[in-house]
Length: 363
Image 1: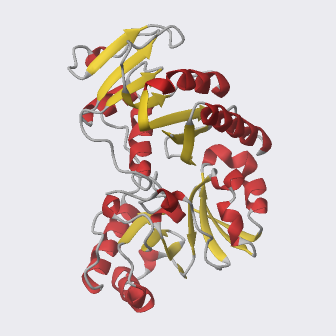
Image 2 (image 1 turned 180 degrees about the vertical axis):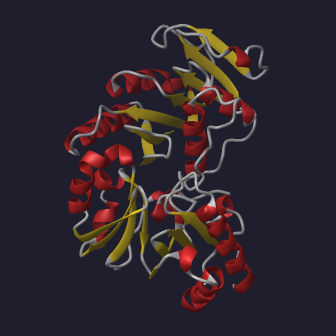
Image 3 (image 1 turned 45 degrees about the horizontal axis):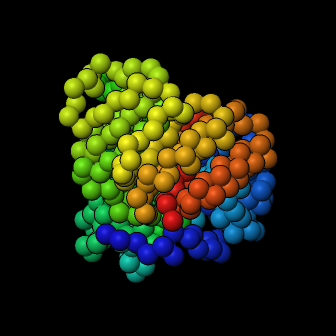
């Protein structure tokens, strides 16, 4: 599927006063500052990262200086404060209520998640699955049966359920900042074959990017800067991509001999691609100052094909206020722009810590 460039611009939010916003626990020191910037007049904390707010200025949700901290946002069209475990017939009652309230609004799909997705208690995960299954039975057939098959600009019915009750709203995935309820797809790292957390970061980034441009086809060639120990490399190879990985430290031995991998044991600053080399994408998860990292990306941009992709992890010091990260992001975007890269979008993904993932295209 192909998305026109103008669709990448988020529209103004609906004039709803009630919103559910999700802010990572990594940004706990600045939560109050963020919510104040959103014009929040009341605040109720739900789950571990969700905040139910009222605001007289919902357009503030699209302010880039604030939106980068919002992993998820949703207008509250229906709220049912209750204790689902104590309510007999909760799933059936909730499904029928959703049909009555949202059936005539023709959502493209229905997706239900947990208010506390990291909880070891399987109860609410099962409850969310059962509620979605029953809702799909009572609603007329919906166009989007799979989260990643949604049209990013068409409204979806998203619901979140937890011990605090059921919270639902309709909004497009792009405006909500994710194809899944609560944001991008969360990748479980419990697999013993997982090399590092970085593999989940690039997987989440690629899921997120579906909202803005088609996926790269198999055999696309990636230049990966700062690849050690190989978590991102492994994920790209598993997706049938070719990777030229650069690092001063060796990759995990499990990647040795992989047919799609070329490993350059070198400093990123010293590597020079062979004349005529063209990459489909550049991936940077370099440690160190973000200004230095983006300068390396800029140096390799001439080897990136037109409309080629850059996924850049902006690593920020511990966030104590909103001004310092905003300045870093502006500096990185400015350097990228001078190199011929335009920003597609930015987000804080589930496995990001004090980091933001920025997505660029070569103009």
